[in-house]
Amino acid sequence: MSAHTPHLVLFFTHGVSLRTWDETGTFEREVALYRRLQARGYKITFITYGDASDHDYAPRIPGITIRCNRWGLSLDRYSRWLPFLHAPMLARADVYKTNQSYGSDAALRAATLWHKPLIARAGFMWALFLANVPPDVAAPYDQEALLGTERDVFRQAQHVVVTTERMRDHTVNVIGVPAERVTIIPNYMLTDVFAPTRAGYSGYRKILYVGRLQAEKNLPGLFEAARGLDVELTLIGRGVQADELKALAESYALAVNFVENVPNEQLPGWMNEADLFVLLSFSEGHPKSLLEAMSCGTPVLGADSPGIRDLIRHRETGYLCGTDPDAIHAALLDVLGDEALRERMGRGAREYVLDHLALDKIVEQETGVIDSVLAAWKDRK
Image (tube, rainbow, N blue to C red; front, top):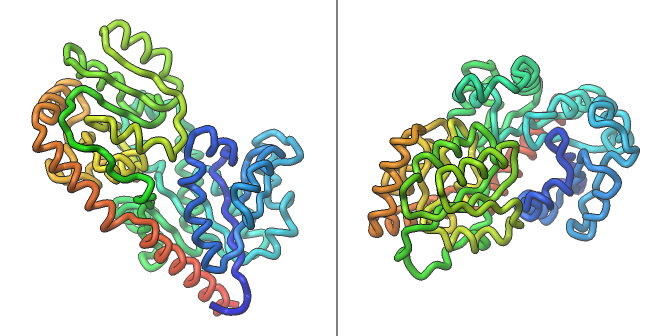
């Protein structure tokens, strides 16, 4: 690497702040990659959507510069004026990167204004999500705006980073981005934090879910499937379906623990206490909670749906089932009734994560993309 210190600016997902990461328990997981990039000689700046209180997190990420909405502007106004509000820093930086496609239009505007290369990263693609969920789940979203932003940013970025082969195929074959400008870098796992600590799999009752309480996650389907079974469900997360799910649990006489927030570093304890982790969504990107459970060696039950089936080898690293309650019910009976199966799937899941998703491997891929983009941009000039 040259004597010049490359300066990477990360644009947060629209509306997301460092406080959001902290309150949702994902702070340490999200910043881990950028600490590693720092150690490799990169200068890092975060552009967040938080207010001035985001600066309070500076002691937890020493050396990383925080730029936030210190003016207290409305979300839309801040997003619109962001390329100008942070102008001096953006003009001096070397390369921009998005955290997700939602809000990436602000990064594209800044890249165009300041003539900087843009790496459009997305661990979740709206086009694939909206195409694979039921119409009533897709209805609340502004599909034209979301798909338009995703398409325009991917086409104009110097490079696109996605997390799965399915996303890459869509980016190349449907959106039309040249294949050489698209790289698959999966979500990384902190395998030293998310590690097996259980003594065995003698239990059979505790079922764990971690994620948003929203329609696309198919939690009512899980509740219906669990009716009449001697199981205890724990849901860690918040969302618009919370009240509906609490009423449903009471109606079905289910034992359900609702836990709004658990810091990411405490999740391994919950996952190692669970007898089964479930993710039964109609569609996913590259789901981190599922991978974290797999990293802990927890047996997982996933829907045979896009984004989940890509990660699970049936009865080897996890168990796949349909999204309807009858299919989920049959899968629960099969998995919870077979201790040897759960033990085998847990071991296979841990091995998969170690082989493919350890942070050290992902850092190598990230630096490869950043350095190649910077080199190509320099040659272009």
